[in-house]
Figure 1: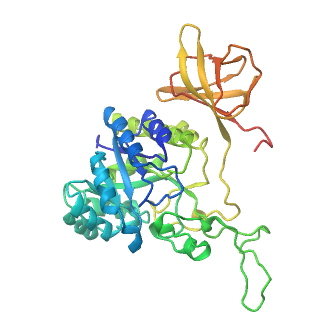
Figure 2: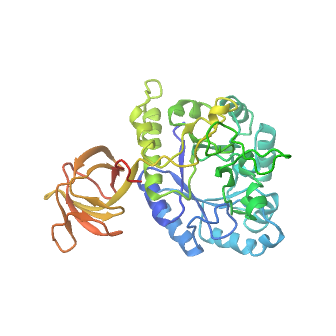
Figure 3: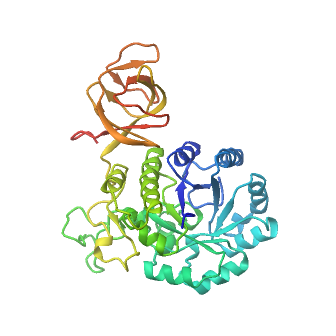
Length: 412
């Protein structure tokens, strides 16, 4: 049980480092080709080497996505790329297509292979099949209940690990295998270029009444009939552990560093609290409150407690809930003067009430009373992107601590 892994998304190097600093055991990243997030920052091969070195120096792991469903032309250069990943010493690659799997086995036979959720693994015989081919871990399809997951983990071969998404955006299509983006805008979701048309507004048009647009719901703005709520399982840590899942996966390689840090921190606290004392474990509402301070849609439990009903969808908007702004990252702190050096991320001014969290610190609030620029001049505001400022802190803080501010009425 103590081998539970908290797995974080990392769209670039900053997000990778923040994920580890805030408690992730491993990250999954994408290269510039062959992954399903073509519009994330992604990593070139030199950056992958840097990421792996950073992770291994602190005892963490890096997995690289190679999980597109390729057309013939997409296979060009794949063998060489896989050899480069092996030389970079990545810990595993994530695959979904049998052809990619075969090329990996032919070229890097000793590489640990994880089967992507895109491969739609929903039963223990399929899991056994992939294990016999050489897969070490299976990322389960998202359309499974706790009961089904436990049945799979208890009836699968010893030595096969299971990973599952526990937090983040949910695709309206089965395990993310969607043709809607390709059909509507010519961008293939299964080759990493999804335009997310499931988040568009839709109206109903009857065949013999062209031009008459009828909302599916009463809302006159239309409806988002494919728009899934975000997944959030932080209140079900005991059930996740008991189901046999070994890796708790957070979605979001295109999300911000603030999002990654906030979500990882909350799940880290919840997991550690449970593992420390399973019998006496009690859920702390502060953990879910933290998740609400990162950008998100309304939350649901996905398929974990059975097939979602109408409450699993959002019908009136595709917008995110964004109540807080990430305003600063702490670069240094002088205990003697109680002054922090901060890199500005969004505008803040004297008089703002801010919240401060850290990798190992509880959240506290304070009002900004004094700020100085890098020349030591007192300033009333910090409006410039990544401006270096200094600020007096009411409590001790730590490097990589985050400053955030609640949006004011009408500000967004």
